[in-house]
Image 1: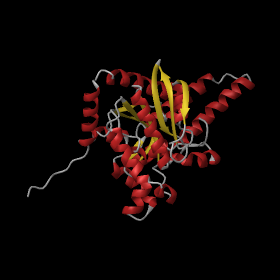
Image 2 (image 1 turned 45 degrees about the vertical axis):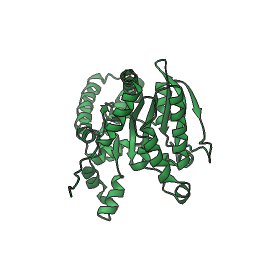
Image 3 (image 1 turned 90 degrees about the vertical axis):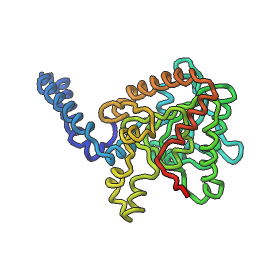
Length: 321
């Protein structure tokens, strides 16, 4: 695996290094170590399953934030053809934390929209760590309206810790941009598929998160607030983030049980970063299947189902007077 590992991955990484060393010895010293390599590989497979099939919510948050995890542009490259990026909101600027463009999946034209993080400090500053400004949400809505005009399905990748909370963003109407998008997306007259591929944080995610089917990768998370933010508010101690992650019910299994999302997309054992191509293939299959299913509904019925889907989230009682 490329890059540094997470704390709970260290025993796995040690075994992987040992296997790699033995393989190198086999090649350079002409020594037959096949049986030892086989035994260690079997032990590695068993250890991987023990670790990754029993991750805590906080550990899944860490996997969702892994620096080698594929981002929107990575999936576009692996899944789609003929991608043409669209820029700007026609009001202020081009927010590089959100990527929009036209592409094809299995011959089907789609409008792709997604958060984009950076791989290093320089790129993260350009992409604003995947935290969009108001102009990013306006750009996304402009792309959605264009897709509806030409009856092109929309595919959205969510991966953000949250919308940018800076003074400039607030002055330019951050809250209004997000709430306006939420309202308008409910009535965009074309199928919308949502994929939470990493972090799904707060209004930053919801600003492009209203759709007909909501999918989440196995190790992604979706929450009203980050575990650290929740811990800081409830306990005034960010070190209690693991307890907050447990309480927030932000994992894929919890979200499916609560009917917040519609489908969990399986990741390779150890996370999407360990085999990006396999994960991309699973997403691609879900896109093709989802578009086929949603195209069977008349537009009016599609919008009614989308609206009701989000209206029924949560439980409440009205007091009778």
